[in-house]
Image (cartoon, rainbow, N blue to C red; front, side, top):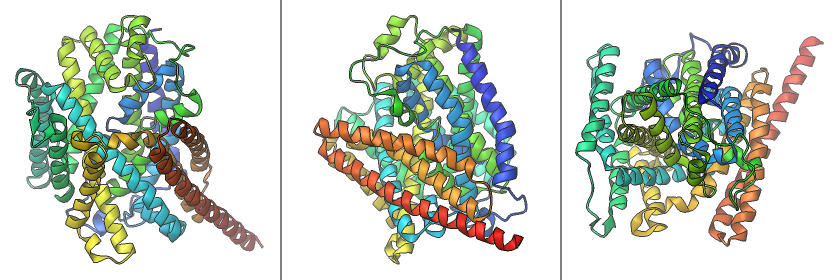
Length: 562
């Protein structure tokens, strides 16, 4: 089968979803008000709350929610065949992720830009809020600790990616000053910045950067992890316009250009999908496709982490409420496009079925490697660039997305600790410096406490990410549904996705519990139980609030009619 068909059908569906379905949700369900004064204006402090051009904010939001997950997840899930992965990415993007991400930004902006966890206290109950915050903190801990490992491994394996990846940070600092201090037009700096980073790609190949094999008892990978968290600490504390916004924006432009290059190469080279539509010979030990497909592909279909970003940083920078559709729904659509090209690269970037089988000897194989190798092959076949250039460029893309997500993740952890300080009246926790050091300290404790001098401790609890992430998405949709019912608006457009994703997540969690117990991983069994039980209690609290509000609305309507 020609991969062009997948690209055209997938991108066409996403365009129609944004053009029509998101418009319906904006006008009939969320009912966006162009005159509503967003927290970026009413609470402006030029540090966290800053009114932002919607294109710049889209870039920040897009790269923050994308990270490496929409590459890793689909790159693994095609082991069951390309059809299930394709259908879940397209359907999930249009009817799940778009509504979820858009809704999280809107709901937060309507409530003083509070995070979805803090918002739960207002909409559901204080008890639900306390439990929800535990799930959120654990998820962020996983994301930050593991993405640091993913970036360090990319730097270690592809030293040519170091210079262009760090050059993007320098470019972001310049972009921030030009946009917010010099008030420069956005077009010219964007073109120059993008060109500069692309020029750094061959420079990185000529001047690869490698850290010492050991330094103070730490290997090269561990040294990168420490450096990354030092950087994340600084990025979490400086005003968003200095680094977070412009870095996310320029990374988004890089992703846009990279996607254009990949999709253009597909149109020119006409690669053939060599992977099976439905794989009837999955490797021994692979889990069942249902429900594991729906937690293996999280980002790129729907992801609870997106709700944290949307209600954590994005809502604080929303210039107009009507921008929420462009930033939230279109942001998730962009991530769907990334997941789609990952599926194409991981199924059509190989010469034969035998080569594809060699990439997927066991469940969990493929992922980032399949994307880079398959994508670089397609780029070399459909563009004037070499395979080596394509491989470095795609690695830089992965590093930029993972790094932006890590920046946002540490800042979100800081917000949560500060919210705990407010909720429990602990002044020290309300201090941004204290909260940031506690957040980074927790990540480093996990990384080195559980992973020794290699700093890979986050990988120990990473198997729980998929189910935790999707449970969080279900909880977020349920909170949004309660809010809609409170306002007398239709809730089925959020409730139906909530029921589906929550059901799949709980089934996956039960399967995972048994598998972890069977293999003697008792620490993860306890962690999984903690997350599942906490999520169940939040779900029950939210469901109770949902039914209570429905009865109240029904009573009000009956009284009005009589």
